[in-house]
Image (cartoon, rainbow, N blue to C red; front, side, top):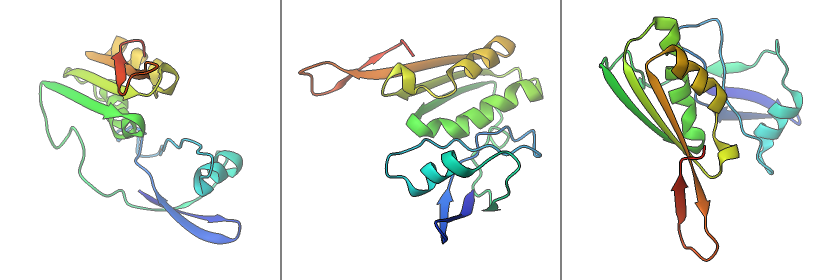
Amino acid sequence: MTFDFTVDGRPVSRCYTLSSSPTRPHLLSITVKRTPDGVVSNWLHDNLRPGDEVRARGPYGLFTMDDHPAEKYLLLSGGSGATPFMSMARALPDTASDANVVYLHSARTPLDVLFRDELHTIAQDCRASPLPTSARTTPGASRGTATGDG
């Protein structure tokens, strides 16, 4: 979705993927990581409060499980790419889905794995298997090493 904000008196627009369940249309969630020089991300973290209103357009696109029914899903994401998959994962218990879902998410470090606790809760209620991984860089190595410690 495209969101319009007023930051320091200037209009600013940013696109964010929904992380809320599509089965709960009265609830809209986005996931925003604060970045050191991020004009909007810092403003959101410092100023936006529950109940505040913002202008939004969209959503755009058709990236849903509903459009691709299957018995099994393999969801692959990295970094902030987790948000659309989290939206789908949050819908699983709401729809009593019996689909077998494996969700592999990669992050830089175990602390960077988004939604870890919630994914494990969803996995207990559904046929889902969260597989968080993190890439650690070994001193002297030119590439990261994938670990299953997320």
